[in-house]
Amino acid sequence: MPAMPGGSEYDSLASRSSDKPDPPHRAMVQWYRPGLWLSTGVQVLISTILGQRFDYRLMERAAGVRVPGAARRPTERGGDQIVDVAAFDYTGHAGNGPFYFDYLADTGDGWNPTYAIASLVSQDEIQIGDQRLPRGAFLLMGGDEVYPDGSKTNYRERLVAPFSEAWGTQPVPPGLSLFAIPGNHDWYDGLISFSRQFRPGRHVGGWTTAQTRSYFAIRLPYQWWLWAVDIQLEADIDIGQRDYFEKIAADLKRGDRVIMASAEPDWLYRDIKDPAVESNLGYLESQIVRPRGADVYVWLAGDLHHYRRHARLDDSRYQRIVCGGGGAYLSPTHQSVLGPAGNVARRTVEVGSIRYEQQCAFPQASTSWRLSLLNFFFLFRNWPAGLLMGLFYTSATWLHPENPINLEQFLSDPARLLWGLLVAGAATFFSYSSGRDGRSFRLIGGLAHAAAHISLALYIAHLSYHLCKGFDDKLYFLLAQVGLNYLGGAICGPILLGIYLLIAANVFGAHTDEAFSALRIEDYKAFLRLRISADGMLEIFPIGVPRVPRDGEARGEYLLIEGPVRVRPRVAGPAA
Image 1 (spheres, rainbow, N blue to C red):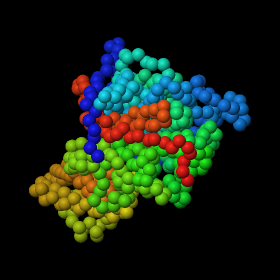
Image 2 (image 1 turned 90 degrees about the horizontal axis):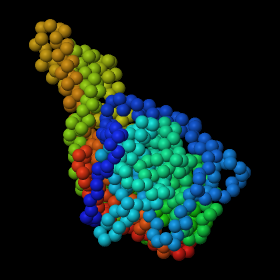
Image 3 (image 1 turned 90 degrees about the vertical axis):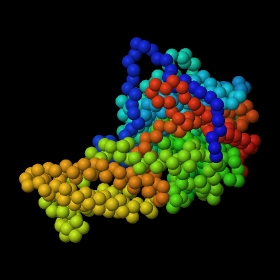
Image 4 (image 1 turned 135 degrees about the vertical axis):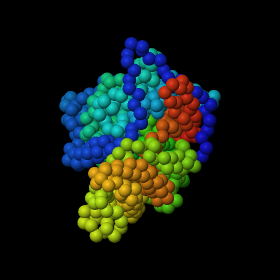
C-alpha cells in the first residue's frame, strides 16, 4: 500500500541552552565491529543464563514502591510492603473530548534517527491534512529503548540526550508521563539500568517517568485499557506479573476494550494459541481478559524496525501492528523467494484458527528489496569486520607458508583440516544464531558459507605463494605472503560475507536481521499517535519519516503512512 502524503515539515533542530556542552552525537551501532561481537555475545550468554535462574522482576514485586497519583485499591495482604496492583488512571479525561497518546519502539540507536523521531513526537501538535493532532497525554516506549545494550552510558547518550535536546526550551506541560517496557537489549544487564532509568521522577525530554516496574496497566477513557507486558528474553511472564494482571482484570467490565503491548510481535514469531507454545500472552487474552467480557482489539509491538499492520480477515476491528521505527536500523519488509511461510515478513499470519492478512508496510516491499542490494557494498559499510576476517585467512598460510595450499593438501594435512573445521563451526554457529528466520536453511547455509570462505582462503593463499616465491630471503617471503593473505582476507572476506547475507535474506529468508543491521539504514522511521473519541472509536495514525535529517539539516518531512486505522469496538462484550 503506498504511503499517504502528510504534506508537512517539522523542525529537526530544536534550540538548546548555550551554557551546556553538546552531548555526543553517537553514530549508528556498528554491529560487525569485532569488539562488539565479543561483548554482545558474552552479554547475551550471561543474560540468558541468569534469566533462567534469576528474575529481576521478582525484586520489583517485593520492593513495595507506591506510585503517586495512580489509582489504588487494597491488596490482599494490605500494607505498604506489597506492590500496588492498581492501574494508572486517565479516565478523568472523559467528557473533555478525544484522548491522545503516543507509541514508539526500538529507539536509542544512532543520534540522527532517534533525534528525528524525538523532535516530531515532542511537538505540541502534528498537522495531517486538515487535522491537527495534539501531542499525547503520555508516551509509551514499546521495547529496546537503547542499543547495543542497556548500560547507564548508553541510556544517557543514546536516549535521554537526543530526546532532551529535541525538546529544547519549550515549556513542559504538567502531567506529561513516560512509560516503557523492556526489550531484549534492555534485559542484557538483567534489567538493572532499565529500572534505574525509568524509576519514578526521572525526566526524558519533557516527559516524566512514573512506573515502578517493567509491566503495568493504564486505564484509558471511554472503556479502553492499555496493558503493557514484559516478556523478558524468552517470551516469559513471571508469576508476579500474571498475578498483577489477574488483579487488574477484576476492574474489567463487559464491553471493555484492551490494547496489548509487548516488546515482540508474537503473531509473527509463533502461534500464541498453539498449546505446544504455552504462551503467557495467549493466556492473558484467553483466560484473563475474555472471561470478563472484555476483548483485545489491538496488539502493538516493536522488535522489527519498520511499520507493518495485519488485520483479521473476518473482522477488521482486530489489528496487530508492528511499529519499531523509533530510531534503530531499518528491518526488511519484503519476502524471500523461497520459504516465505517461515519468514517474519510473510503477509498471511495464522493465530490459532484465525487468519490475519498484511494491509500495509513501510517502507514498501520494493523499496526494502532495493535497499537489501546495498549488501554488495558490505566491505565499505563494515570494514572493521575485515580486521578479524583477515586473521582467519592469514592462519591458512601460517600453517604451512612454504607450500601452495590446494584441496588435496588441505584434506591430507591434520592442521589444515582442523582449521577448516573451525571455520565451518564458526560459520554454522553464525547461521544458527540468526534468529527465527530460515530455520531449515541453517545447517546447509552455514556449511555452504564455510566452504566458500575456505575455498577463497585456499585460492588467496595459493595466489600469494606464487606472487611471493621469487623472494630469495625466506623471511621476506614469509612476511610478504602473510601480508598478502591478510590483505586479501580483509578485503575479500567481508565482500563474500555481504554476498552470503544478500542471498540468504532474499532467496531463503534467513539472516534478514543480520543483512539489514549491516546496512545501518537511518531512514523510514515511524511512531503511532492514537486517538480515542468519546463514542469509543480508536483511531491509529502511523506517522512516518521517509528520510531522516542528517546533522546540519534544519528540517525534515513526515507523512501519514496509511489510514488512519479505525477500530469501532462492539457495544457489548466479545463474541464467542
